[in-house]
Image (cartoon, one colour):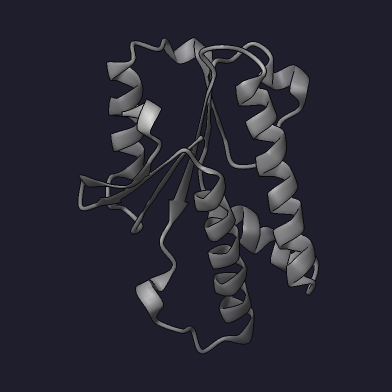
Length: 150
């Protein structure tokens, strides 16, 4: 799994598109998600790009006040997608996350809670990822990379 993090409108998606273009992966083998897809839906793809992670978390926050349940749900989804990635040679999982305010704490209680949950989910994602890249103003900085991925 490759986790790409950066500010809003800082070029993360463009960077991912260029990365996939370098790997010569045709568009019909790439699925872009912002929510759960079934195993059947994923079966015909070689690349999953999970985008708008923070929106998925915010939507979950509207449905429940249980922050721990949302984090646990995210961990289960990451585990499921990692199993999909490892299930067949050549599969790739890329998760794109948008930085949440660079440390500025929102005044609104719900926004603060969503920011906290997003941070916890991103920490878990970075922990499980083989590679973590921060994209800021279109410039990529490798934060984590397994030796065999280099």
